[in-house]
Image (cartoon, rainbow, N blue to C red):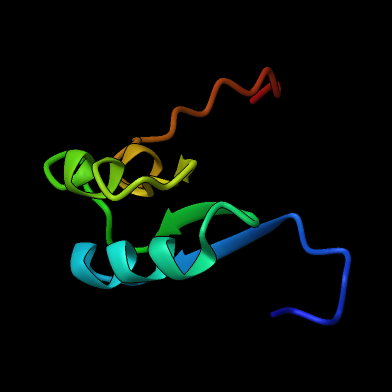
Length: 74
């Protein structure tokens, strides 16, 4: 049990789907659970099936190409 208090969500960072499934069972809906780290669009469903509440997919932002739309005069 987490005796510190003020905990809203537990982040499972760089867990495999198998580790995530075990952690979700241990947490037993006492806290919101988020998976993060190394998750791709291809593995997203594997993590969702583990019962987590939130999933962070860095691949969505890692592949974005920036565009400078500055209005600075040259």
